[in-house]
Amino acid sequence: MIKSFTRNFIILAFTFLGAASSLAQVAVINPAEFEKNEGVLLVWDYAPARDSITANITKAAQQAGKVWIIYYPGQAPYDTAQIRSYLYSRGVLPLNLYFVPGWTETLWIRDFGPAVLYGDFGQGSERFIVDMGYNAYGRPKDDSIPSQLARQWAWQKQNFPIQIEGGNLMFDGLKRGFASKRVLTQNPQYTAAMLRNIFIDRFQVDDFVFLENLNNSGGGIWKHIDMWMKVLDYETILVSSYPEHLPDYPVIEQNVIYLRSLLNAFGKPYTIIRIPAPPKANGTWATTQNDEMRTYTNSLIINNTVIVPSYNLPEYDNLAKQIYEQAMPGYKIVMVDSRNLTTLGGAVHCITREVPAPKFARITHRKVTGAQTYSPDFYIYNTCSSTSSIQRMWLYYKKNQQTEYTRVPVYMACPENMGIIQGLLPGDTVSYYLEAVTAHGNVTYPLAAPAGNFTFWFDQAVTTPEITLKNRLHIFPQPSNNGFYVHLPENNSIVQLSIYDRSGRHVYAADDYQPGVMIQPELKPGVYILNVRSGDQVFNNQLIITK
Image (cartoon, rainbow, N blue to C red; front, side):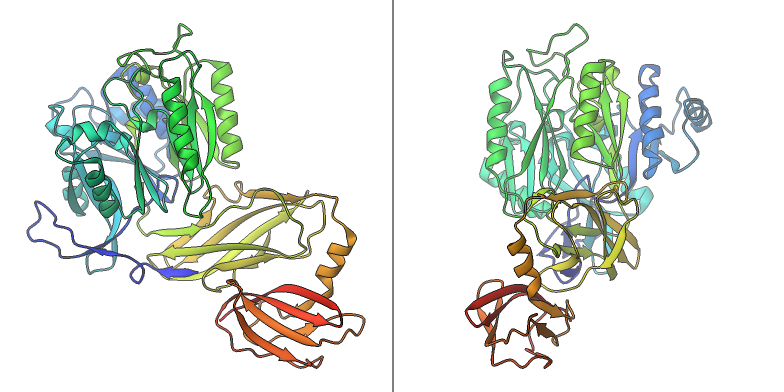
């Protein structure tokens, strides 16, 4: 189904503190990190020990989107020309590179930087900034960065009264948000139920969960979830694994059990992928709160690129890269040495802040991967939402050893759109991706397409009768616009023809169907089951009705 931004949002009342007037209503979309972004924000730290990390992140990210570097506009060791010179010496290109003046004190922009959502303030969809509470650390310049950017970019800003750092806030894009229970102690004036409802209302999710703190795995007082988990897509969560002898081992395993119990937006359990957390340089792991916490989940997803911390530990670093490559096939995985960050309590994710694309577009699709039940015609279902008009959608697929994709249209048939891969055989392996063409550009799922795709296959051992019976009932054209023909080979006569919707409700019947006569059932667009009785045999096939 293709949905319009303005028709499908819940309208919330928000008061924008510091604005000249109260804006009565704003419709909200809260994008996930792995959805389409314009670019990423970083802070120039003026610290030689960490400048190379910023340069390496910039070098990787500028191939996938814009990079804005916030520099100190007052008296500072370097001006922008010197910063540029350093970046260029490290292989950074002028491509997609921008500088933003801003008064800062640290480089942890994930925690104090702007959360960017989409809102409709009466002039159509636009991005706006959510400024979360960050005033407990004696760093007023850092705390003011969302306001500084809102003024420079002329964006609306909403103050969020809850104390929470951005590294402790994560979303799956469709249904749920996550934080550690540290947020409960940061906001003692609220009960857990009250906080849950506030997050649900403000970020427009169906659920919000608080996970147990890792108190003895290092990283200081923060206890952020991005140090041990990462949402990779609408269905998949990456979670660190620790040796059993560590004090936080049972804590993280209990969190995993809880995450496995949750259903994603498609009504299925999340896929949980484990990634071993690396040891410190001395081969041990943290066992106290203030020790060094090394992690591979503290990564940044920026469109088709994933920037992952590394630690000069080839055995662990290489395994981490392999796990990301397997979990996100086709994405460019770039490792960045983060040893000078984890000693301070963070890594790559902590010093970056993604900025969503100017116009929102989302393809919602439960990916089809792995072994599937054989069918010669395979249906790929999805929905699509956008803040600008969607002009068309495409399904791209390739079979077996093919190097080029075949493109077929995705048909609009509420409640879901569908594309059809036809002519499949037992033993086939199929790779595919989806694309939506909007008035303001294209979006694919996955974002790494065409290099990235989803792959499924059929077992070779499929019985001939099953294939034959499936192919004996033909519907054409398929999909149809409420006019189609039905054909059985071998001159079988159709005694009775019935159509059922996906809930099983009987919606159409025709007795003594005459071959060659068009059936015009006047059905709403959708997917139906066509049931045909011929003698003592019954045949079924899917029927697709489009507009």
